[in-house]
Image (tube, rainbow, N blue to C red; front, top):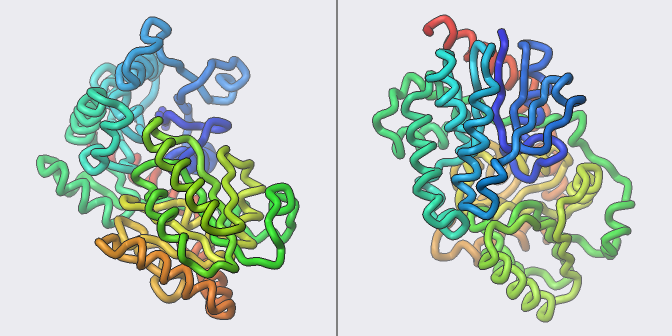
Length: 387
């Protein structure tokens, strides 16, 4: 079976959970199908020989709205899909390519919904009028797809609520996974030393992009009043817009003036550094206001960190409240709730350790990428049988 896997992000250009998903899914799929990955970036003959084809936006659209530039990549991907028996797209950045590939080449289209444009209205900040185009592309693709993969049961409900014309029988839940041989406790301290963390003080850790979705402003306000002995480490980069960037910087400066031990790393750290930070964190925090699943919580659990996270989307399918972490409702008292949950974990090192150990066990036993890939291939086979 020859499969064309379509994605914006692919190593080394991975900055979000969808990119992590595709990276590890592709690794496992290669042993099961004839796989060709189509992604954004500068073309490389060596990568093409290894089954990775990169596409870049048309130069004639340099400076144009990002949605238009995305569509130009989709057209290039569509043209390159000849010979594939099935195409599998990830995120709105490639959904249109999957849909056009289905029409042009007469092959089934499977799409994985990592998020939904109707539930991310703040994207209008980033895309302007392009947000209407991204929503159109997603709707067109999802309603015509032969199968839609939801990364959580909560995500499946959201898909069917946003797109009621979609046949529920075509929406399948396949959870995200985690490589627990890669994400595992690393008790080295080189990364911590480079950042300048005080080894005698616990720290709260956030890892993610600076976006409305990830709830970073809520976190910066919440940690103002947590235990002053705790350090705060923010691995936060890739702001969506200049506006959210300015808001983040203002809140960070305000927080830095009000408490000691606030560390901001404004770039994407190498994975080994992130693993060390997760391993040593007193608590990992995920304040997302929208999260279909949240791979980063799995990464934290696999490294033995207790998790404080928002009770939204698919997060409760990963983080067990009271067992592997603490879940906080996203309501009018969200920031206060975050602060109280963080303090509760910081105050009881024994309970935090037990949560971290339980999180590691859960990640190993229930979220392996090999199982995700096998389930995905079974779905491919079902779709091809019905085509």
